[in-house]
Image (cartoon, rainbow, N blue to C red; front, side, top):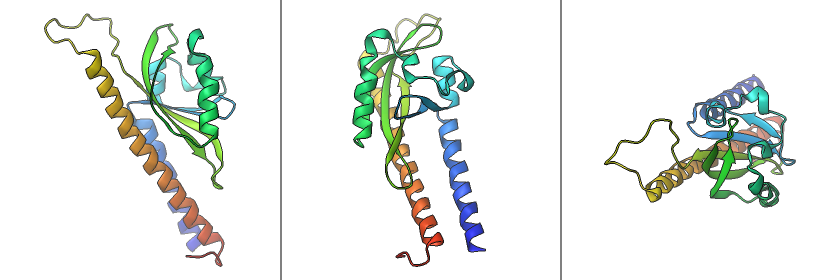
Length: 184
């Protein structure tokens, strides 16, 4: 009975985490260590203009302008080393060809044994795009836009840390349930 309860709790945690990712206003993209896209939330589809079906399995560099392709190798090297990259200011390309000014937070994805198996990217447009001209008299400065992007990235970094904590807690609890001799 306890094993069934534990599996239900783990499933509930997974469903809750998936809901957090899907309901985020920032694009959240998962990729493996070869740079292939493995997950794509609704905000990523809205931001970049590609559906999940169009991009899952594709190389992440699909989103990179040609002059930024070198960034991916550097990002993957740092993530393989377990590093989280915060507030990485860069450009990415949408499906319609627009260049997007982005603030990225990139975190390692760990498996049950703590090995890095991929990366999660939280992407926030640091500049608003619109086909409607802004109202005169209330321009938003570039510094304010960058500040807004950093605040959002920091908040997502906190969510990412909490999700990682919940996943580790769930794995730890699961190991104790499956291995009665494990330390409490």
